[in-house]
Structure formats: structure tokens, C-alpha cells
Image (cartoon, rainbow, N blue to C red; front, side):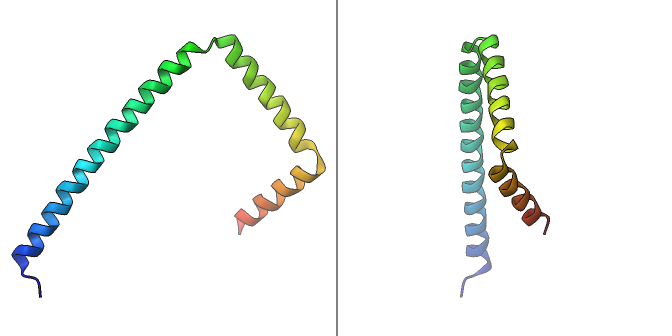
Length: 81
């Protein structure tokens, strides 16, 4: 059987470890965000807009065909339940 002092000590240790891991994860997320913004600035705006337009056009055409549209409706109906 574990004493209250040792249990308290173990809880404190786990709490400190979780806090250390949280800080590490936040640091990594900030680093990834900074790298993504740096890469995004290197893409010319007209190219990004053109790719977004072309992607939207292709997606609209793809989902307008019978098979994907039916699968999408089934998926949305299944999520409703």
C-alpha cells in the first residue's frame, strides 16, 4: 500500500513532467507555425490564388458526378445519426 506522502510526491512529479511536455509541444507548434509562414511568404500570391481557383473548380466537377455525390450524401447522412 502506498503512503499519502509518496502518492503526493508521485502526483507532483507527474504534474511537473506533463508541464514540461506541454511547454515542449507549444514550442514545437510555434516553430512549425513560423516555418509554415516563412514558406507561405515565398509562394507568389497570383500562383496561390490560381491554384485555389483550379482546385475549387476540379473539386466542384468531381463532386458533381453521380458516384462521389452519392458517397458524400451517404457519409453526411451517416454522420447525422
